[in-house]
Image (tube, rainbow, N blue to C red; front, side, top):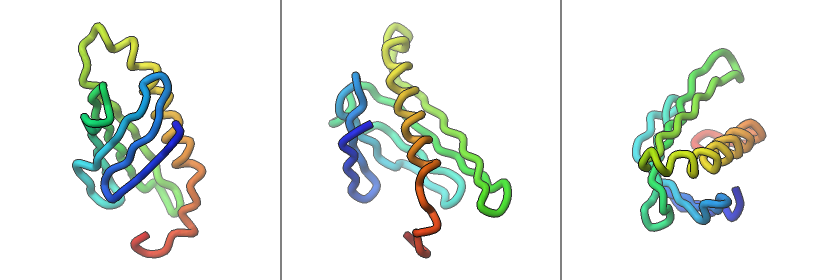
Length: 106
């Protein structure tokens, strides 16, 4: 994942071999859920991503990422690999994020 750009509730980035894609937040519940949908103007393949969070203890949050591609069964083998790479990259960035440097609200 390269070329990340973000504005408000939208972001876009490059994922090979899919090309440039974008996401928009369509639902959020603070500290519990963020639901994204692909932005048609950026993404040739449409999909939805849910990121669910559950606090397991102090400074310990468990995360579940669910991806629902909106493509035909015929295209599924072609998009499965790039989506898996995207999710792995997203999780990697989340694991490395320094939340201690973020103040209230931000």
